[in-house]
Amino acid sequence: MARYVTVSSVSHHPEVPYEDMAGRLERAEALSTRAARMGADIVAFPEVYPHLGLPSERWPEIAETVPGPTTSHMAAVARRNRTYIIWPLVERREDRLYNAAVLLDRQGQVAGIYHKMFHTIGEIDSGVVPGTEIPVFDTDFGRIGIAICFDLNFRPIIEGLSRNGAEVIFFSSMYRGGLQLRAWALELGRYFVSSITGELGQIIDMSGVVLAEATYEAVCVARLNLDRRLLHMDYNWNKMDAMLEKYGSGVSFRYFTREAVYTVASERDDLSVDDLVREFELEEREDYYLRAYCARNTALGIG
Image (tube, rainbow, N blue to C red; front, top):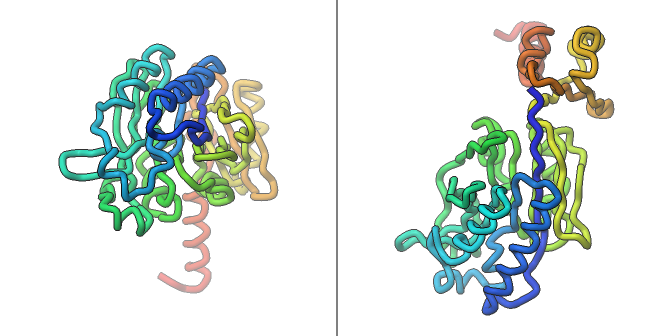
């Protein structure tokens, strides 16, 4: 079934100092509300957003519990706007500090927390504890995952989020990610949404194409169909006309011939992309690559 969601990211560095937390939260509220008025179902903020500008050496004195002052404020915003919010911060949990991202649901409840798994050496030297789990979170529109900054460089995190079923991966960061994000999107066939402490946050299609980018405007928004699959053209391309003959505009395609891939999506309420894969015996990319690998080994006489 066609399953559309409007995602949004905020790429922004607070203009006011940390000491003016009321001013920071007022600005965050305004940006989140702007995204909601543009149709966003979920709004993501950059890494440690309320605590930006402070060196990690000061994190022990400013870390907050969850729920806490800033999450409670943003929970009220989420509840009022009926959106999910990803709110990254420095979290204190008992005697430990975490670089965390809190997922608030449409009712303002804490729906989950991700702890950054791979920190820079400087963060670790400041006493921040690495996370140990790669959670994914169920929402009313689909399953999402979160990665934070340096995480992007480590395959176990990004591949783990995809393997655990994340359909959209949100990347909250102090660095932009750039080509890395686009490469991951294409490799995994997943949507990526980045929120950066500056310009150039992006919403990236599963093909690696940038759908929206924040420049002077901090908020970027895009509508995604989650009932969509990225396939290799080999052994699938010749089945496109049969799908169109039966379902017409109830299926949609987009072509990325430089990479020899295309996407197929359902636009109907009574048909899913999984139904299309089964009915027309479409071959998933991973299965195709494995079949090619086995054919090579057979040709070489390798058992």
